Image (cartoon, rainbow, N blue to C red; front, side, top):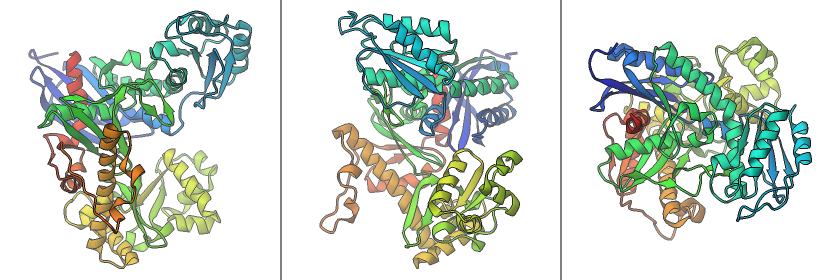
Length: 549
């Protein structure tokens, strides 16, 4: 029951490391409360529920007073990159063009139209029926694409109807998701929408369960990659539109708080750093269509770049004594209470991290995997110990550990920029002693002291962010990248090459305040950290929802 004429909007961002939530009050858009909880990748709704519980308990606002909920999510992007989703059967009508798309199989049938909308040849119904009969016991969804369906979609509509008479599974037509020429890109767009449908449905069900359990009955919007809110009811058929959802919310927060109409918005998370640009107070949209994984599509999204560099990037020393920072994310030493003291295990090469099984892993999973079985029986171990005890080739073990991480069956702990900040006294969130032990052991491997090692780690992650910013700007300005044109310009013995950015940087994310000042100094520009920058994505989502409130 509302007690006055005010209502509230909640913005939620499910990031790779944390789920953030922000509550703002209408009509003055005053931030009432913020919350943060580790992202529960195995069930995103759990982390969302925890954030909502924190919001309501701290704000004393009643769930019935929530008018809108806006959600920014990286789910679609992650699912495509990780190869998750439905098995798709693609049927193409028209001249055969072989596409390398993420489908179970592709069938080509006669049909299609020309640029005037005239039929090239009649749709081959026999071949269509034969294709569906081959696919029906193997696929979860269908995607159909006909030549020049943007001018005349008749053949796609007939294919959709014919498929539904044989197999009741969902059908995605390319003319429904794109009105642009380019049959390959239209096919890719419909395929990715089809592939993402079950992933998005699972997320949306979990989202609705979270909101219902908290007593929230307000409208729900998912942030699209082109910085527009989309009703949750449209999302399962247009899941690809949510690619770049996070960067879109980032850009919206940036334009709301930027001191200048043109600015770089840089979101530094635990796992990645996302970079977007605003010009004349608006996000720059890639109107030619965004690349999702390996595939060019007709999905509009903010122009963005992502680099595997953040507060939790893994800093490791190779057997040859080379320091590498990122792109892999690990749990910081300072934030882990389940691993032995780093002085007992950390070192070069395969001693660079400690691996442990997730605490709620099922016995069935453990029995089927010798690495999991060993970890459950013997506890946290380094890859070196696993290699020796399980007699596994290094390349096989490393690949398998990567897969187990992706499935969230194990957690890897190692040295990170977060640990370096603890050692240098700039951060006091966790166990500094563990961070210091890691720094001392790895520094000894390089023949330097712990503080010098930590400064090198921070310089390494800052350099990755700086390079990504340069690449993003140069790609927009010239179509080329610095790392592609001159990747080793810092090592030149003949000249120094420096850049001076003409736009300021707006920092977002908890790690931004520690990592971006050095980046901004090298780019000879200013960096700003507006209020609530730590939860900028969630606030950006909430502010975007104001446009439809």
